[in-house]
Length: 461
Image 1: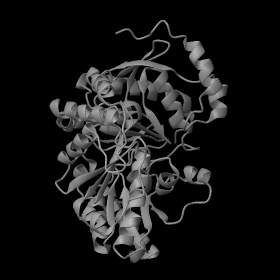
Image 2: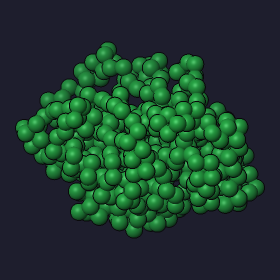
Image 3: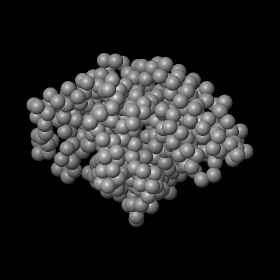
Image 4: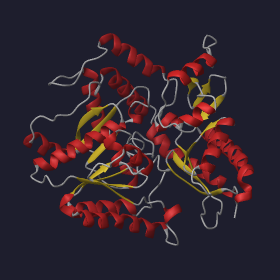
């Protein structure tokens, strides 16, 4: 393929970007000191090229989202056709469009039968804002207005809007928000590598789940509206809970009549080898926010699925729901999402992920002999590599995130995109990845690990 349009002046793009583009999640002082952005120009399959013609294996599917891979002409054609038919109309005031309604039905069809109603948003953040609005109003309608409190986990990520940032468990985000919103509480994450000590993973899973009941009793069982968690915590470092964790969480929530929210923004649409992460982890939620893989990132779109028992009461007891977004259920985004789900079904990408997942796990495990790799773990096509200065004791390097950033930069230099979450290297490649491409991913990861080891070997225990 033509990997670089010769009419693009990359130096001019960088200049304009530095002058005008205010980037998200960026340390702008160091960003400008380093000379500006890396400009991505083209992509195909699992590969992406920057403006200098460098080819990189995208081990992160963009931002956990390009599930069907890059370069899908069908998705571009679906957008083009819908733009000609009806480029936009809203879904307010008893109105809909054909692709929006069809998408709601299609999402419902790939979920457990109890999820028949879908509310559309534009992102995972908006989906989780929607949930807070819905749940608090739901409990008021049920005559329990005191049920306003949400419990989530440390290192849980639920978005970057004001409400979603408070719902999530990233302390740095909380500090920038300012005064924390009332009604949001956090318990420890089920991360055995850092917090498990001498316990088996199964023992630790039960201990981590018990933190939920402890927090419920502290807040007051009648005050807690819902518990929210990602089946696997993505941006927190691909934290895969022990097998005992989620069933025990469900048991505790049912005991106190607390709603369970499964944040499927990353895990949904096949990432774990099932359509939904909650199916893989073995629990039954009441509410399911989603985004990313819904359109494979080709256009912005999010959604929330609500279980029938909630919708029944909400529709019968409530009046107007004063909530929505101008572009929610956008017909072009919906058309693309529909075609995206068609591709996932036609190519059996969920089955492919389930089948190739063990090979991915085995390939990552081959890195455990590396002097700075303390653990590898994965489910389906989402995985992590823990960087450690003391493998036997699961030790950590000084200044969390410093060595992870080194490794991330070494990945980019050597043709691989792998994200650093503190000192955990995380991976979520497109679901179309092959065994041969997994081998290449792991080879490139080892090259980056070797380069990182050369930088930090004096710090090993």
